[in-house]
Image (cartoon, rainbow, N blue to C red; front, side, top):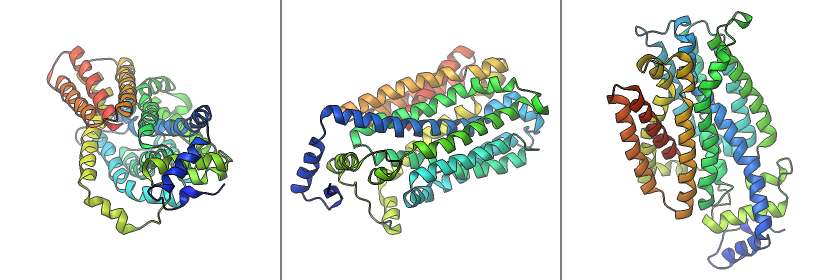
Length: 383
């Protein structure tokens, strides 16, 4: 089949050709093909994002499991805060080159490779002698994890039209968000290995989760697929006509399926777009809230609200489950109504209320309810 969708589209004939090619697949065939892509791409990326969030946010669970005492993290050296912070330095810096590299070497190799390497770093967390060494490893972890989220979002955008994308982003993010909740329960279970092989329970949290990450990194190399135009070569995932159908849908929707050669000038030109800075500011503000909850909620539940270690680990889960449900519902209707702004504004107001309840009340019950509102708002705005 001739790849007419790779040619520069004209205003009439090009669009007609794309629609004509799409129409060669019946609605049932289209639905079956899209479902196959969803299972292979969205679910795999979701599980990779799951271990990504699990690995970067399990410090709080390890802290209440005894890490702070063994590594001498206290108020005099701010060991926990520094260890949490340094991750984001390299995580921020390396996101920009990651989006360039993924296009050069392909998403399957790039994404599976960084997951495997950061899994090895997580394993090393279980053997650190002091918090300074852990902080150094967190710097490396940030550099490796930097490419996953932007790379995954970019890869999904090359496979789906605009108003079919949000539900896939939500599913991808939903799977990852569930890890933030159930990570506490998993950590509590792993704590019970305390003393096994002479290692503290908090060390087993890093060792087992690191092994899991390595396994998923290897498995993702088999399951992930490259960009649509490369998919017939990616373990024979799609044949030529199926790949043509996918690219024709993208071209008919937004006319950017063909890949332009990389240009640093065009890449940096995006910095002149005010919308980019607005989205960045929004993302920064919601991320600040989300990560504050992820890193400090187990500590707040134990130290400030008075729950036991077991309850503190387990009570992390319910707000994230609620956030996942609300996030997915919002994504469905956001696509259906083709509406984003009012939903984001509503989430922002919800977040303000939730943070107020959490920060300024004394009773545990309304403060915990505030955690629900703040978590739902942060996760839904991310999506």
